[in-house]
Length: 100
Image (cartoon, rainbow, N blue to C red; front, side, top):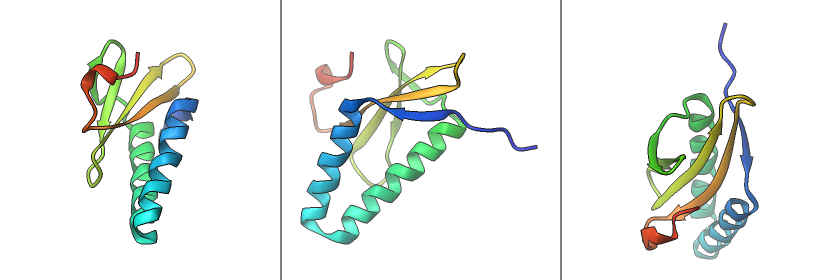
């Protein structure tokens, strides 16, 4: 029997970041926008099934995207089997802007 993954929930900040980046890449090209959307979906799926990536800061885990310069910061709630995506962080930003 295959185990079920954790549920993914986006904090409003991460949701806004996602749509901002989607718009940004969409202004460059539709294919780039779709590639970004697909990589985010794959990242969320991977995190849902295997959430214990790098513990980066306090209780925030970070998942590095492969093709785009972003870290996905999230918190794991073991009791509710919920992963809260807190930030889709562009890696060119200052690390002092990590989520708190």
